[in-house]
Length: 237
Length: 258
Ligand code: HEM
Ligand code: FES
Image (cartoon, rainbow over all chains, first blue to last red; front, side, top):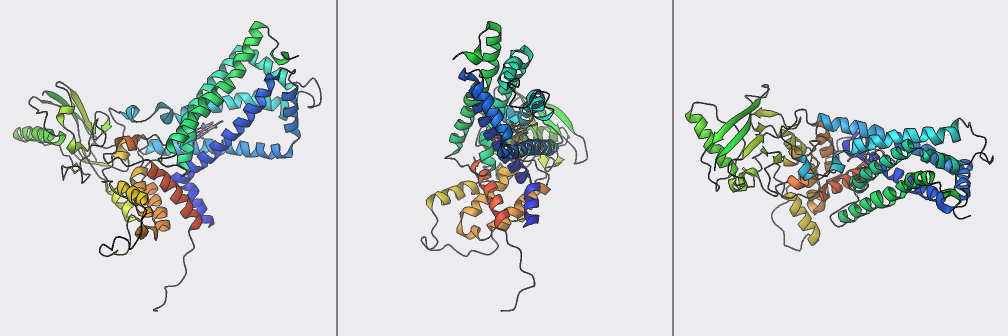
């Protein structure tokens, strides 16, 4: 059994299935992340958002999921690099004239590019939020009212550079998932000609509407509120 | 029609090869693409030059031998069409047409437009068959096969092994080809018996030949002259996972005399 599993994981199909599984897990995480972020718009001074964030810090389950999350990203990236390398090697002499753009979508051909931009953002994002609030702890403990994550978010997104990077990354995330979501179901074998249009529609909806508009709303609204001097965190008070 | 042809010329597998340009002044729009090459080759032979080597056999779209990458498209610009079934009326007077061989590490060029597709034969030899003779046709209701399965198996069996899927794929992946045979046989009662070993062995051979992996771009399906569906790749992926889980260890020993 063990050698069957390792044979599976070393095969082209197995490697791709790892990408599909980790990719879909990251999608589930992003849904949760989006939900927590939306709490920022409650206009309660960021209380709901801060409570949720602090609750996570204390949850052992979240701690475990966090580890799974890091492992998923690492596996996803390793498999992406290995498969892309193997795929480039499979055609040592290129065509002089290639019509591949007529038979496939831009999204499907540029997954490594769109993924790499997401990766760059993840690193910056973790450095800005995860590291100071969870690892080095330069801010006092979560109970300290000075440690107001909601205000930190508002400040970070008030920086035009960071807001722009955020916005561009959201766009590339949408591009990545526009192909990736439906592709994962094909990879996992959960597809046929009846379901294919459904996965494609669901993938584009998730990518552009849910994640695209959803995540884009944070840099756009927080940056606007900085420029227009709205008090977005306290609007309901 | 007047046409300019840019054709890949390569003396043998070792030669580095280059494009040669030919002018054709009297191409009939009713010729097939291969007949146009016949005309060119007669001219070349008349001038004492080496004719362009290309694969062909049936010239009616069923053998899968013809294999030309025409203006960036496997088997040319038409969908569901082999090169031998492509007619010159699909091009315009004065066009320049670039013709290249299939490009894939697993399909080395032998000469000009001819590539070695024996990697496909080795994938089939690894399991793309039913080991026992299934006998003559049975009474229709003897072995029930659901209508949908029969139709899907028939559609998958239409693969002619031309390699357009590999040629069209940005990763030179052979998954459409391998999956067509794997799903065809997995759908039918006679093929089901060996489905576990078949998919394990065929996928192993496919990877060993150095084809790329699938990124679900869909180019293969778009270029397939027999319209083999991407659905087969999902079926293969499912079969492969199930086979990995369900494969039993072999019994030791050599078996008794009964
Ligand atoms: C939040 C982050 C990410 C999510 C939600 C995500 C999601 C996905 C999904 C669902 C797939 C489809 C798997 C399949 O086709 O079977 C995929 C594929 C892929 N991802 Fe990601 N991904 C993320 C980050 C990354 C990163 C950081 C990279 C690379 C540096 C990357 C590179 C790729 C590549 C190359 C593919 C393969 C595309 C293909 O085979 O068609 N992804 N991703
Ligand atoms: S020559 Fe037989 S399919 Fe084209």
